[in-house]
Amino acid sequence: GPGTFFSKGTVTVYKVEGVANVSKFCEITDSHVGSLFGFSIAQTQSSNGLTFAVIGAPGANLAFVIALRQFPYTCEVRNTLSPDSSDFLVNDQFGYSVAINSQSIFVGSPYYARYYNPGISGLLYIFSYCNPGSAIPQFTRDCVACPTAQTSDGGVSPCVSCTVPLPQHATYGTGCTVICDPGYFGSDCLPCSQYAPAQGTQKPSFSHWIDMQTSCTWECDNGYQKSGEDCLDCQNKALFNQSSNVEWIPGTCSWQCKATYFSVNQSQNFLECKLCSQYKAAKNELPPSNAQWLDRFNECKYVPLPGFSCQSGTCTACANTKPANSHWLSVTDLYTSPSQQ
Image (cartoon, rainbow, N blue to C red; front, side):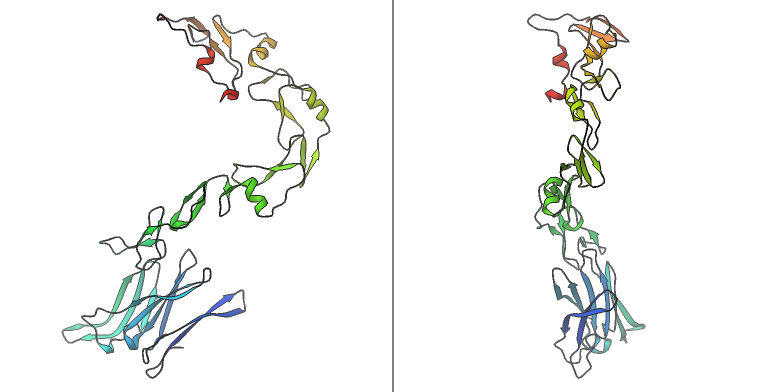
């Protein structure tokens, strides 16, 4: 409890969990008899779990800023506040009342009175005091968030470079928090296939973890279909194996043409997938004169033969002449298929 003019004051901090679970967290005692330490108390909590408490000691014209945190354990006096040394008297009782928010500490001195300032009776002192992760820039009074890759301990501390190890595939966020790149998870920013097993997360047989997704989850292996939380064997594998240039649609017992192949028919049982030139031949479609169909490309289209250019469906010889010791660019020169990337 607060001290008296003849004893030391003690402030005991209790931790409350749930509705009725109250336990002692720490205890702070002032060494000065008569300071009235604990006469007034105010607190605020920052976003990183650190609580700042202001404890008034008007008998000593002081106020103490206490930092409290459960993990990692913190219970310490961070700062001692006092009035202007050039203008205070013992009976001012600085610290009689206190308040705090995310940017300022307010300390009342109700008995401030000076004969040379007869119009003033009592003073309110305002101290800039920042939450962790922000600081007061030079020549200003307001708290400003530290730049990226910097943080502060709050209070009057300056911004300093982050010392928290930065994993691969991560960047620093506000207050040196580690933000994993999309598709990476946990404090070490691991891909799903490493993160999930490290967490002890289970997946069914015949499945695999999916990397580079916004959430860490699994899907059934090719040839298996998801049923609830299991992966069941597809009964049409023999038919799939008889097909060419096809691939399973993940998590299903259906398949589709591989990239750069196109379906001649729409029957799932006899899906016929061919390259663009074969696909167009099956449909009896010819390219314009002086052009050819483009194979092994995601889009089935025609391109001009070397030395020609196409416009509005007509391909004509290039107007410019080719110098000696050179050649017209071919389809291979102009286009790169997905399989060649």
